[in-house]
Image (cartoon, rainbow over all chains, first blue to last red; front, top):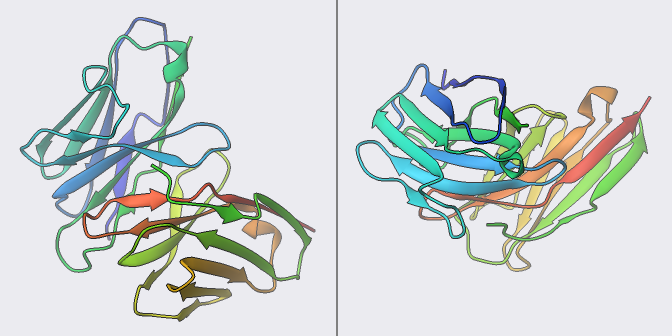
Amino acid sequence: GAVVSQHPSWVICKSGTSVKIECRSLDFQATTMFWYRQFPKQSLMLMATSNEGSKATYEQGVEKDKFLINHASLTLSTLTVTSAHPEDSSFYICSARTGTGSLDEQYFGPGTRLTVT
Amino acid sequence: SQQGEEDPQALSIQEGENATMNCSYKTSINNLQWYRQNSGRGLVHLILIRSNEREKHSGRLRVTLDTSKKSSSLLITASRAADTASYFCATGGSNYQLIWGAGTKLIIKP
């Protein structure tokens, strides 16, 4: 149980276009989802925290107008990278917590590799 | 945001040897978690230790936590080639966010 999927697994897009990444909790309801980005050989950096039905809370330095997060249902959150540029190329990972049982458990998606050319 | 340091940054050992990685953090925590990440892949949760625990075992993994020193260690015994990966610690607080260490790259030589 507690499986999180991401779609797509990888995407290559042209500079200036927008890309949407989906994060789904497959067998549980996720009250909170987290979005991270990871540059090569570096650790995860939290971008934003999203709770179902409310606006996402962005970490300092993350542009909310560039990285649009929608958590419209308890099983789906989306991250849209708008007007992508090569510096947005990164590995994007989402995680989800159930809000029940162990409050400390987060379940991670497999990640989406974005390359902007 | 990153919580603290992990050391070493990279470690290469022979198969069969034990590998020890350390993690230090700065703020008070509810728990500390260790994750493994194979190159270019997602994260695998290894073990969670709560702030009131001092040691935890899971298979070949042993994690210790010293809250007075704000540090934790991950020991992998009898390492295997398949253990080659990056290992991250992450601390959990009251707001459910995880704060990550920089990671240790472990290479097991066959």
